[in-house]
Length: 376
Ligand SMILES: NC(=O)c1ccc[n+]([C@@H]2O[C@H](COP(=O)([O-])OP(=O)(O)OC[C@H]3O[C@@H](n4cnc5c(N)ncnc54)[C@H](O)[C@@H]3O)[C@@H](O)[C@H]2O)c1
Image (cartoon, rainbow, N blue to C red; front, side, top):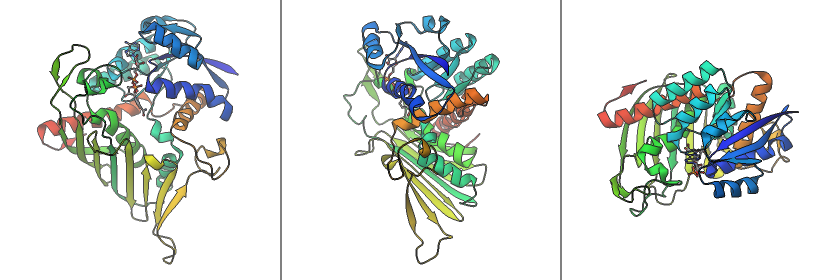
């Protein structure tokens, strides 16, 4: 068994999901590599040490540049707010480290391109954590489309709805709330939530060729956590866009943090000539399938409980009928990354794949500003 020493930067929400994945992957997947929780890096030493103790990290760093300089680190895992992705990724690539970077790849296409060029020049293994690709029901949807079971695709429809920023008292900036600060996040729901929908859509249904969008910032000013002053809000609170795919299908995407009652409602539906598929994150282990080829007496939407050993990733888990959850998508991505090191093949989405999503996000924001269709 070869070891892969992980240096993780940021111990927030994603720091926990990734640490859980590294800790558990070898219990369930037969792999030649074993991740080792070598070092956790965050600015606050006391809190980083508490995290290291809780999760079993061997050491703590408070400066990510020092972490990257260490010879005993093989892979850098970027779990920081978006404004740090570029500098960390480029420094890590130049130091010859493998990189696992959280999504969105960057705040802009320009930043993303610099990152892609740095990792391509260094030739280091890399992946971006668009983890929903590895929810078994979503992977199954991709498999069914690739097998041609839907035939020609006419429509792709996706939503990602939340309601946690409705209060005008919520500040911008700081832990988790950096998402409301355009300087830290790059954009609002477009880069944070729609990026997931776009990554899944491109993966399943192919390239997007043009978009037309509208965005809105419902709360125009919020106190900034770092300055204490009331400052203009620069992010998009809500975004809806229409898109055309290269395969001729039409799409509609919507995301907001102002849909009262919805916490993380990521849904998509695909309508083809022969069949349709639908998926809902709140019921993530199920795929709804309508097959027009079914006998008309029993034709209807099938509610497929994705838990059988024949279905993606499920032979690694319990027994048919027992489902898995959100955290497993990250375990699957680590397993696939480690397998990619064995085979020498890329682990998608690579930085370059994630840059395709970045390009669509930027086109969406540009279209919302100009009121025009934007070609990609
Ligand atoms: N794949 C997904 O579904 C998913 C979900 C949530 C977040 N994300 C992405 O993950 C990233 C992190 O988001 P989060 O929700 O974990 O944020 P978070 O606010 O919970 O955690 C961010 C962490 O970064 C650390 N940090 C900030 N500045 C730092 C610095 N200069 N040096 C070292 N550490 C620093 C903070 O201390 C904190 O531990 C973002 O890019 C976000 O878009 C992805």
